[in-house]
Amino acid sequence: MRIRVVLSRPSHPGNIGAAARAMKTMGFADLALVQPREFPHAEATALAAGAADLLDTARVHPSLDAALADCIVAAGLSARRRELTHPPQTLRDAAPELAAIATSQGRVALVFGNETSGLSNEELARCQRFVTIPANPAYSSLNLAAAVQVACYELAVAAASFDAPRATAREAATGEDVSRLCEELERVAVDSGYLDPAQPGRFMQRIRRLLARAGLEREEVKILRGFLGALAKKKL
Image 1 (tube, rainbow, N blue to C red):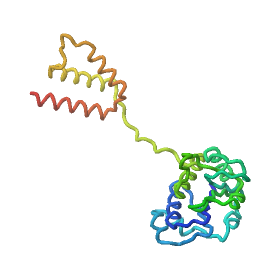
Image 2: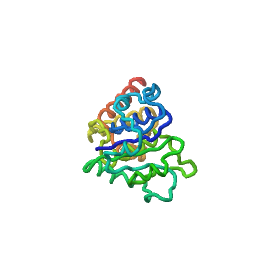
Image 3: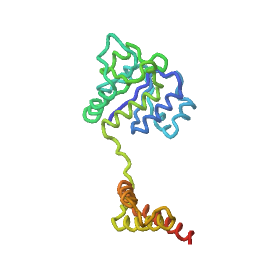
């Protein structure tokens, strides 16, 4: 997926490094910087952690036009309301279309403005999409790297880039396993004096229902039976 993250006029080198790290976690590597105040910088490298390779390949441009020259769509991200712009879209609504374009048509840029002032009206006018990240209206300003992380995440999800890790397959307990466990539980309950065998009530019915809801694994049944066996030996 051809996604470029463009940071326009970033003032803090640490934010550049943190943004690179955010990109790499979501599988993106194309980073462009427009007139960064300080770059390269040791703080950027430090906060990039394992993503310093993105800083090594990042391109520095003299203007936003230059950074967008080979992109077919640019999405400007901003929290501020504007008058003379395209209708705003939420990031989640915009992500499927942007991901589809980046996958099948050409390069898409996600454009982020300066940490203090965000994108200017002139910069946003150079973008074909105006995208917002919905947030607390009383405090809607995201840290630059956090905004990059959220944007890259939404694009990766829209493109189904990653699957959730699969759980390790575990062997379920059989009916016989559970029956033997119930026998052990009943024996210990009687031997301990907790259960009166002359008036058992619904004790074992409730125990069986509880175990059925638990969805036990064979290893778990072995642990419980071993524990009950140890209790029985200790009493003897």
